[in-house]
Image (cartoon, rainbow, N blue to C red; front, side, top):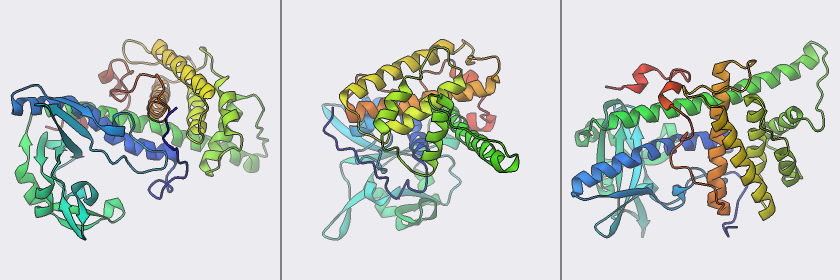
Length: 378
């Protein structure tokens, strides 16, 4: 077990969102970072004339969210060459047609004797997806050309805001970014498509509860039923409550796993595991059981995927919804894997790319409704 103290109280940046929503939003940047890593290695190798190894740095190497909210303080990337390490912060914009390009003040410099001084030991790598352009930027340049002001999209948090006309002059073209952007857009759409499962389930549960009044139906939560267990966890999650015996609940829900579950039942199971896991501190014997179940569920996902990217577990579930369930399950498995590696030093293989276990990625694109304009920006 790691000595890292786990803090369960959620900070102000996520208290207005569910924990799943918070993780989804943090994961969008992780998708872009993982997909950009090899491109960054290539462009730096080209510039330096020798092989440059780029890796995710610090805690960010294994995690894209913190349970208490916020982000790790490490730079996003480390570039290793010439017996030295250079640090890079990563940012991107979907389009260059924005009024300002914003940089968090804490990422650009630190205050010394009341004055903010630019960091000298790192750079920013910035990608504009819509035009396949990039720039390497010194923090001192950002401070020289940007103004400190609140950013409405960030809840008026302060940033250095560089005007559009100044920023676009430093951008460089690179056709190699096209494939990178293509994959980022597909995987971001996959994440959004998977998360739609939660909205659909909210509607289903709402209709179920309303039927008590509107149709005078009786709604029962039955002991030893995965569906009832799931509904209880779902409701507790929505009212921001934690079971008193959450550790016992987690061990109990693990026992529901079997190889013959439909994708919908498996999505329910993984949701419950993720909900309970994120609320507790595991003992070693509990960690062993969680890790074992994660491996079994991953094998289940690989077993039921077809070569053309489809996911089949039941003739009664529409192919589109089977795919949604698969992506929802894999999404949460990745979160559980990274968290267990970071907090508990588990022996699970860390995630190297988001949705890496999805077969034939590009055949998934039409199913998750990625628009052509989003895939090919030039």
